[in-house]
Length: 471
Ligand code: ADP
Image 1 (cartoon, helix red, strand yellow):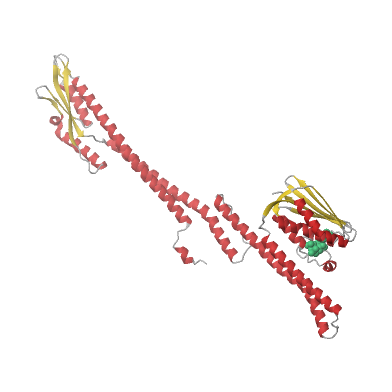
Image 2 (cartoon, helix red, strand yellow):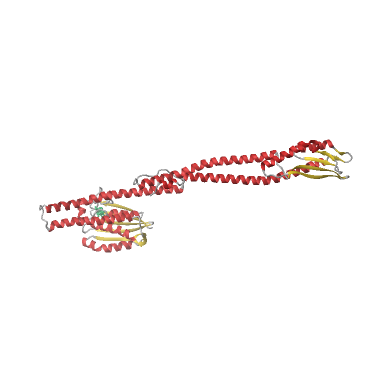
């Protein structure tokens, strides 16, 4: 038994799946962002440093070219170059060999230089809050082939490296893109998680509902929803099979109760009327009448015995204890046991068949042969013949039991395998059959995945054909 409260604390499959999807997405996006930023920092830093070195060397070389031997420094050109370099964050100072200033960016516009340095510091601390950097200088001597050292170019900048506005814009765009991808993945995972969990949980919820209905005795409920998930499809199929088996068993139980009541009513009514007649003194309780009552009691007894057998077979017929044996040998042994009955009734028995191996439940197959043979004797008059054959047909074995007895009418033929069905009730009552021998026979054959067929003509004979798979 379960109480609803026990499950209130538990998360539904849908919630769990959605949480898992979101967690996986969040973790993945978070990891991707961290790794991207780490890699970006490393490679971008290398790129920026290389770029700065390259620019420094380029400017230094450009400034050096402004010295013409014999003419000296071209101050105007130096100024052009240096002002343009200042725009890119490079504070340039050119000195002659004695240390006197030829051109100095700070002298040109110190506040612009400070502004540049401050701006770079802001850029760097906006990206790295604990950033520690400062003004650094690179010194490049200017050497003339003829005159030797003619000056020095000192390039100052914010070091050890800095990100320009466009560098920062690139990094921010990248991060915005990552956030965008993250949000999109989150929405997507929520959506997919919802769809997936709905697909999974709907058939499971349906299976639970059906199982509950089954437990309440509603065996005709079935799950019609199809699932393309292997496990849920198997679960649905299993529950449907379970419902089917239970429904069949329930029908069988009801049928059996009705049949038993019906079958017992006739002999009991006979007994009751005979007894009442004797009690009322209408009939004398002589040996003949008591014998008739005794016969009725015997019949009821036999019927109860048969019923027990039937109940056993119907509950056990799914459990087969298979072994390998020779079917012809088994039939020959059974015929030997029946020999006396055949002799007593003056019915001939023939067997035709070669040795054939079979993997089946030996006891249950014996029961099949015994039932068919005893019917053949029962329903074949004196002087008749019963012929049993065994034929090996590749994957199956064909067993036939044929007699030239009274036969079965076409109206009865479709019903003879039904429980308690007797072709001629009054006649068979004398032979003692309760009409369940063939029911058991069919149940056993079908449990072996075999088939049983019957051909019969009234007053000519009957042929039962049993087809059994060899394994
Ligand atoms: P029973 O106990 O009455 O023999 P079965 O289930 O074995 O019950 O058979 C059902 C009915 O089928 C029998 O009552 C009989 O009328 C008919 N039947 C079975 N076998 C034969 C046969 N070999 N020849 C004629 N009738 C048969």
